[in-house]
Amino acid sequence: DAKTTQPTSMDCAEGRAANLPCNHSTISGNEYVYWYRQIHSLWPQYIIHGLKNNETNEMASLIITEDRKSSTLILPHATLRDTAVYYCIVRAGTASKLTFGTGTRLQVTL
Amino acid sequence: DGGITQSPKYLFRKEGQNVTLSCEQNLNHDAMYWYRQDPGQGLRLIYYSQIVNDFQKGDIAEGYSVSREKKESFPLTVTSAQKNPTAFYLCASSIGLAGGTYEQYFGPGTRLTVT
Image 1 (cartoon, rainbow over the protein chains, first blue to last red):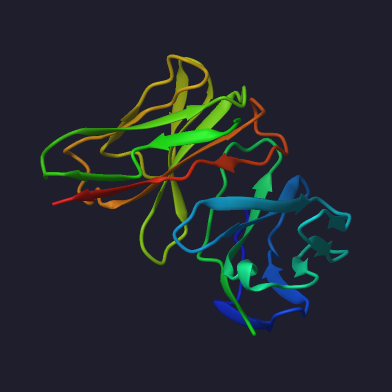
Image 2 (cartoon, each protein chain N blue to C red; image 1 turned 180 degrees about the vertical axis):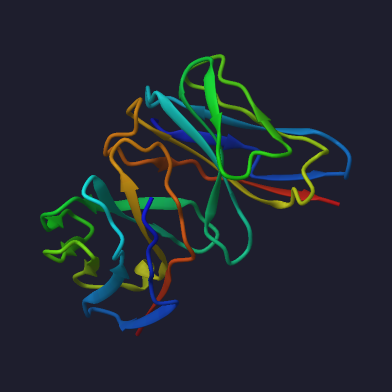
C-alpha cells in the first residue's frame, strides 16, 4: 500500500469548512483513498472513499487531484463533535487490510 | 441491533497470563480483523480472516493467536509471549472476501492492561 502524508494537526472554527489534506504521491492505479476518523478514546469510523472521481456523502466530500497524488477531505460545516483524528489511507482494491498512519488531529473551536 | 461487539471494555491481567478478547458481529460479514493501538499511534494489524477456518498474520502477529470457527466470531488470544500487551484492541469486519472497496466497521474496542 502507498504511504500517505498528513499534517499532524489542524484547527477549524465551528461552522466553517474543514479541509484536511493528504499526500499520496506514490499511489498506484488500483489503489483507493479511504478516510476514517477516530474521536477521542473511541473506535475508528469510516467516512468516505474514492478512486478517481470526487465523492460526496452525508458526512463529507472527497476531492482527489487529477494525477491522484493528493486528496482533500472536506467537512462542509464543522461542529465541535467533528474534533477527532482523521486518517487518510491508501489501499489497493484487492488488499485486505488498512494501514493507519498517525493521522491529522482536527480541533474544532468555538 | 446490527454491529460488532467486543467484550469486556476494560480488562486487567497479570503478566504471564494468556487472555482472550472476544469479537462478535451480526453483520454477516465474511472478513474480520484485529488491530492494536498504542497511545498517540495509528492502528496496526495483528491478524485478519477472510473466511471461516482461515486467517492470516498481519504486521504484528507475534505473541498473538486467533481462531475463526464461526463466521460471526473472531476471538484474539494475547499470549504471555507478547512483550508489550497493554494496548487498545480493536476488532473490525467488512463484507468482501478479497477486500474489494468494502469499508471496515469497527467494534468499540477492549482496553487491556497487563501488570
